[in-house]
Length: 628
Image (tube, rainbow, N blue to C red; front, side, top):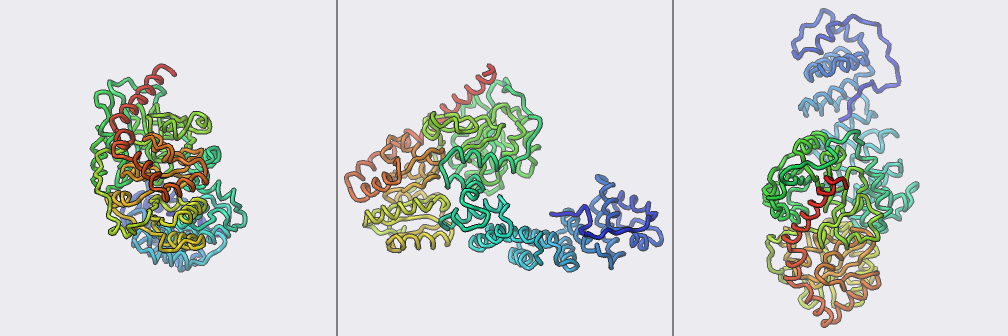
């Protein structure tokens, strides 16, 4: 919430000096019945609003919320004609909101707006309060109807767009963000959201948007970390853009909390930090890793910044730790000090730059050795992170120098997997709405990973293989509409493009078993979804590039001995897919590589993975203790 520390007016109010010692006494108390001197209302009329603010600030931190609210109310009552009355109502609203009186706060902000309709902070705070109360439409109307001075225009537009995006109204959000950027193109955070909405809705070309002051190269460099991975596989560009994002978003810390060397406990202490210990893809990958750690050599801690979702996977993940700490709601410093007090040797961040990241905790250096794993599949140039956990395929030796932090290979395949996950039978095609006699191409990756170039390659495959249908899973109707339109432009009949809605993890896995070939995205490959496809014995075709994100699926194909499914170019990708879709013998030969044992003995061998992972962790501690 905004709070005024100076009256929002260009007019200087000059008032006589008044004797009001009772004012300090009132602010020091906590009693609405404080005895006031005779004529106090006249004295309040003589005290300018600046003096009220100064008295409150001078009394902090001893000023109680109730005393502050009482003073604002009494000043308002005595100054009905003041030009600063709107500011008093505004500050009263902020104080009431902080004290928990949400209804009173909304009323106060409303009064401030009536008195000064062009005072946009009142509209902002009123809208935020309505949003918190679940009154989405009322909040949007408040922001949309506010008188928009030049100062207020972008702030109100951005709040409206944020709330629209959160409520799935992506087309409206994109249009409003565009208006905001036309007003002021120098808004990197707004660019990030705008570009990512265009990615999610397949509004192509994403970066050729005819935006004055925002040419494609600027849009690329302000796209934000996650969207960036789906726009380029140039690791140097990724590193530079993400370094700039980190510098803007995460404050510097002067003194690290932890010593340089690990602690000399009987067992190495590994801490895992995440806001995704819930029904999230990451938890489904790592649950069994936590369970399989060798407790004779390792003590495992979990630091959970996740909302309680009541899921079985959350229960299982937390049960997999020897100790777990709930840090949601704590400041970064508070969380870091808890980790430091636990004397963690190796702290592993599982978020990276994904939603609800707690990377700022690592800025405090609460552990001697710090690494990032799984959450963000790209460079993360933060000095306090020592290692990016990977394998030798996703980051080969010749490209390691482009990465920060230092790439560290942890196992033959970088991705942990859960061998206990319940897997159902493939879904019958009739139940999935698929034609029985078609060759089913599928991609169940998020729509923001589908690029214009990759979709064009899929259309080329379908033109070259007439028996194919393409089965996609997108989470918004604008992406569906865009993809159908692009398919029509490419000469593909609409009935050959099929969409599967979002569903349960169990049904999603069964759906994979109903397809014939998984077509991967580029430059942001499938990760968890690629592993799931291989587990369901679904052949996969990928295109490998230069970046970690563009080599994820290739890592898994390489591990199971299916390297012929890793294309080196778009042309190779299209040609291979057409061959597999039109030549049954070629397809049968390739599919034989995707047996249940192929997955179990590689990506699904959690025992082998855990032992290799632990060996790497042991070496890290030994090297650091030895001064390496």
